[in-house]
Length: 618
Image 1 (cartoon, rainbow, N blue to C red):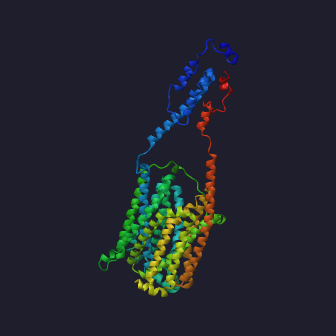
Image 2: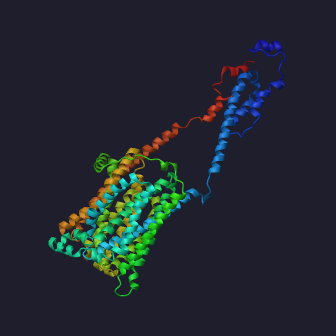
Image 3: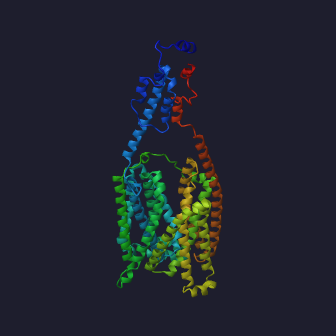
């Protein structure tokens, strides 16, 4: 037997032959290394142990090679298992408690943010309704003042504020900047309700305005009204700035600072729903205080009493916003990324214009933003002129605006619930075209009722309304449906359009639209109206031409939306294709399986050395 083995084999065996039983078992040293400490097996690595047992018969003859090879494999497996176990223990230890499936840490951010947004939007609705009442119903003023206000007062002050804000952001911390910006708003609105409005008869230069009006003529009533009621105009501008500064700059900047991307995707849509709840409640608040004068005695200025009550609420809500901001900064840890500074491209006005013109995608997107601003202004100012004619009293005007805000909130809330279905069922293109379509159809109905009120008079009389009241209601419906479509569909479409762009175009395009298109959209309609008023003498005389301009603007809007839809879908297709290619290229043999194949699965190892397979020569 021994001679036969020696003639076949290439190895020298010990003089005492190894028995069959001992040959079928691993050596004691190997057994000690492999099986002394049994770690918890990983699912993907357990095959190597079984393979070792299965092919054990061939390996004892090469203990010097096989043991070291198996030892490396076992060390790797044990280390991997230990690391995995450690990670699992760390994760379970670090996992924070949850309420309704949401981590407590997240709720500590989202709930205060939701309350802040509610307070900000509650104030904004009160301020928005009040500013219109003040400037439209004031003596010697009318709705024709609004275009001049937006162009020559609001726009310069907005630009001046942003320049000041930029300088302050370079020298103040984020917390100090927040308080420095919001506290002057709170102080001003409180001072207006309790000091400036009661003294308005003494601080307004009405005699000077009357002299200038007699000299220049009635066409200059709008510009001169700014001088006549300058404190009301200042309130109008501060209310407008509350919407753009406190909502867009302060709140969303703070929200983006303290939330992660996953939290934003989940909870930001809920902020929109909460905003419309605030719109409904604030509308009821305006209506309640506007009706206070009915219970007041004769000789009492009911509007002054209502204004003091509403400004008190604005101040209280403002202080609540400051407290919530302090609480979040005091008790909620910030994400790591929020502490990193990112350089953003700074574009001047001319650079923004050049960038807009050079990019078809950004140009179409800018057209959407500008067209909305012009269109809504063309209809809204004409409607407010009819509204003053129907409700000349400040309290009646304010009460109607309270109902208007409540209806807008309900319509927007409903549209937001339906918007997800529209996006899922019909896609981005249809959703982007709904807002201009709604604005065009309701705008045509509104202008038709104004221009051709005679033929509609019998039908309107049967409904118990005058043509003027019918125009007011149709205009209100036009504004409600247009704004609800804007909040629920237009704004999400606009933000979604940035997603497929590369990072450089995305940042520069958004900066260009913020610098150029938002002010241009707000003041574009006002400039058109100013030209019409100065050319035709009044807003009523220019109504037919405003209707024609609205048709042209909305047509351009729809064309831009159609063009942008093709580009957007093309970019989305390219993005999806790139993701598929990335997924396809990432499908490889797992690293664990490769290491396993190299470190001990003899049945599958293509890289086994000749020494490992040598025992088969026995």
